[in-house]
Length: 208
Length: 194
Image (cartoon, rainbow over all chains, first blue to last red; front, side, top):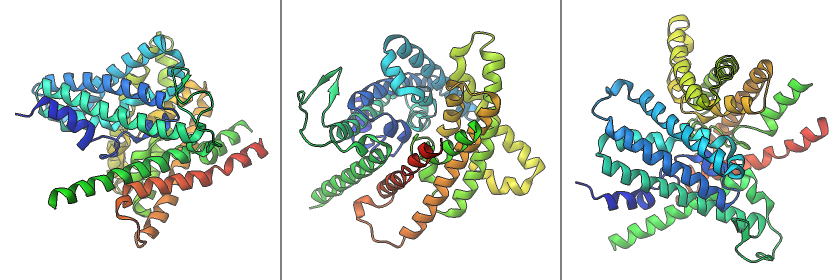
């Protein structure tokens, strides 16, 4: 019997969807021009992932395995529609920034991957833990990526309209390329490289 | 004039992969060899054009008149998923050669966010039917161009020494970043032309 807490931590650290499994890259790169965007995108994904995990886990013994993928798609699309409508109503500014990447959560491979590889094989409680864990892992990766890009690309990090580093910011000429698409690819590439280095160091230490 | 703008914009300036971040999973997944990249691009062109045309008709003929606009996401993904299945079956019957060439890529396309993305973008920018089809041709051609070019680069760097931590996926991302930087040059061209 797996421990739910362990499942949550596993989703954040050891099986981080973005940094380890390289899943859900399109939204991860597209919306992270600022840390705050990463937070909202992550929140939307946590909701959809947890809810779809719950339903997928509940119906896992009812649905024949041949039609499971279309079922997953309908379940996920339903929750994405809920998020789409709620965000449109309550956070319209963020909704227009995230743009088509809200409806595109449907084809976010993180959600399909967790439904297929975890929720359809485990009990509801573990599925909830996995949804929260993997979703949080996704969100933290997006916030980190967004923070790095925003800091280097604009010289400051703005949360809720308040610049975190004071009005002056870092005080250097910001590298605009970082908030443009090339900066996204290169930053994420280096972040995954860094995670690989840390991982191999940790492995060596365990052996030694 | 407008169509030319959509075509050039879609292929070079707003390239799906390099500037819109759509279809990254298949982009990284099939860009290891030029052959597979070409096969995947063909399949994407085919599915994206058909899917955009069909979803446009569904949106304007069924969802809007009935006031069901909020069902867009659910309807579109179902249409695309069943369309891919349908195309696969038709192709198997009518043209086995083409099926052999594209067959393995077709199921993968259902979860290609570029197909759904282009369909939704066309609706959101209020394109007419013809503009939608042109934008789908441009988008998929841009995807094909990106993935085939990148496959060429990756075939070359298989024999280059790369730091161990960056091997494989991270290196692919950084390479994509540099290509995207190169594609930025086209923005000037677009401004000069239109």
